[in-house]
View 1 (tube, one colour):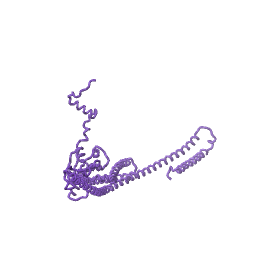
View 2: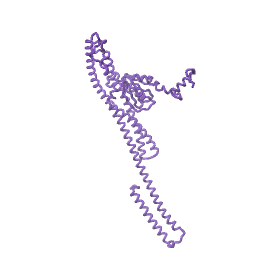
View 3: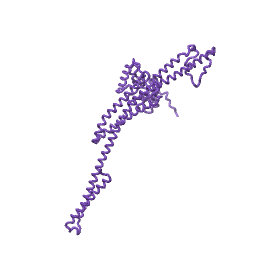
View 4: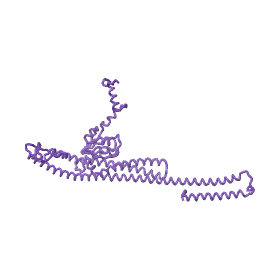
Length: 423
């Protein structure tokens, strides 16, 4: 069989078509593959409250903030994800309703949008940072930015709950007094909105509660503390633990970042020319580093506990706020359920009355049928001695009427005992 030689083809469209078919089949959707690598508009806000709009691609954000691709997917407006707050090594990823941002220790990157919540977040954060720029605030920068996202989200939920309550309560009262198809349709639509809002509030409520229950997640959000520790470690790496120790013989990074799997003996000589002096210097440096590391670990653990308490108090305040909003929505749902129960009772009463009228009409029809039977019997064309008595027809009518009356009232008493009619 003869082999095809593609290299000899000089048509420029031929290679393009081959590439398209190889990458996307026969459809040729070349623009879909690079969609995730395009630049997006971000609003950058620094510690001084200065804001600027930047065009950043996904790779730049991932590199600068040390974030995986799956975290940036939470901020993509093309996807719908529930509310999430994630603490990472160098950033906090926040996805709360319309506010989608990345918070670092000294900057905030907000997904640029024309939404009112985004503009309000930008304006409010810039104004707060500019007001507290020259003041010694106990809250670090990342907590200020996170607090504002929680505040705006909880306030938005509370206002939506109040607005929905003011709309749905009059409709429910009107429906309770006058059952109509229009009112039922309005209540059905509002109940759908209530269930959707309750699910969104419940997700934020659960997310805050999850953060409060996990000390590790709260510790990951102390970006300023971690940055200061990193800067301090970098500064110690360039400092010698003892002025008598020469940098050419031993430096702090060599001992500080020792691998536990391959330890170095502190008594080992460093320089072959002066083995005893090098061993003493190395042993002295190692003991000094051990004492400093113990002191630093004790200090960091105590400061971390204080920071966790500080963040937990901040989260608890908004947890109470959103829990109150969730209670409002729950009470509103109970009010709707009570109204539905009242409507079902009224409909049952109406149905019972219809059954009563139907039974009355059935009994009346039965009585009328008896008289029709008597008239039909006397109207038949046959010879009988009863026809010669002039009072026979009257006696038959009287007996038939009494019998029908007894049957009619007997039916009523029977159905009342069976509780078909309300007593």
